[in-house]
Length: 572
Image 1 (cartoon, one colour):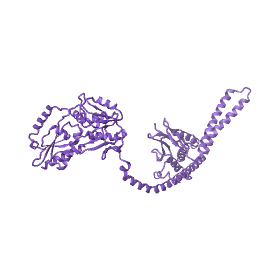
Image 2: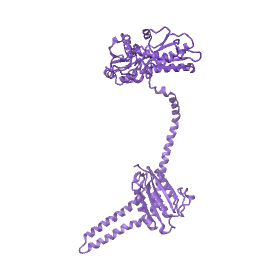
Image 3: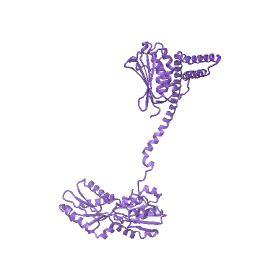
Image 4: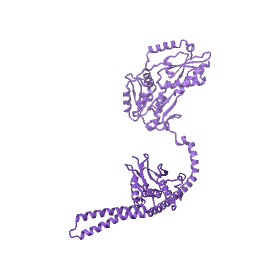
């Protein structure tokens, strides 16, 4: 790096390639610190030397010549520039015999401190495994670890795992005893010459390892290791940047040591059943789930205050809810009583037609019985004919039974709604049978149009039938003054959507004045001289009780049409 007359220039040389997270994180920390401190009045350059894959002296020489030529016209980056090195220990710097004018931001990756942290977390451990790769850097790390761990390893059955393929590393680590400590150094290259990002190699090994793994790099956290004594690359980058800023300001600079920190992955502590109480003092736990109070203390205090206030409010609401439920129950009972009265009135209005319909099968039964008596008095009774007469009597009896059953259902009083699932087409057909006699008496032609599929709805069957009877009798009343040949009543059912069905009842009567369409469902509103004004309002109350809607409109060709829409009990 060098400062010029106006804007300082800094060249950052990365020893490895851009995929190595450690050096990239440190480099970004340097850039951020320099840009902030100079308010972006600085020129930054970056180069990646890729020394892990090309450690040969020839490659280093080529890179030196290439960079010299590349920055030859940048006099601020010439030989007189200040040189700051970082990312290795002071011991390594002594071995490298660095020039006196080179200043270092050293980071001693103390594997012994990491090992001591592992001992504290696993006091019962009896085996020690140290893992290292096959690159020149990997081998130098292993040699350093053998020397540094010489005293520590005497307490364990120690094994160095080196010069293996990644598959062999993974297999051996998976088979280690549970009372083992595994220290992972770096694997930049395995025995087969394959290149790796160290943290990716460690992650592959840790996924199936038989014991906890520790490492001296922060980048190993979140890749399967429990933790270690690390130099955070952010702090390393800040140390380098501070040295650079001192040099830019023209101040004397000297070697510095980057601070170390104990870091642990809380998830791995839980995975291996390791107690956080055994962590070194001041250790940082990453990925630790905060307690409820730590995460939500403000919300909890507010919630307690709200709950205290709400206690009284909820008690009042519960009382009000009971009152409302009692009112709804009372309202439902009143509706059932009104519907029953309406059913009785309908049965009374249709009594003549019902009697006529009932007389037909009863008269037929009597006639057949008299005919059978005459045949039996003959000298040679025709037993086959008598058998046919008995079959006819049974059929007529069933007809009479069906009429009586329909009337009983119409007159039955309920104390609760009888929820059922039934086909709307069947109820419409049943209502037409009840209306048939009255329609014939009034010279009304009743017809129906049903869909070919079932239209299942969930409601009280008799109540829905009552709605149809109310609308149909109103329609026949509306056709009293219409010419006989034009009296037509049509009942139609159809599926409107995948979740609703519609029943429509249309007539050829005088229709409804437009100004009265909005009021016809109101209680006691009627256009009949002797009407009560309750039939349509009761029909609306019934339909809405079962989640439906009812509406009325005039037909373009004359007459009115009433539409009842109910929810489909099931789709498909």
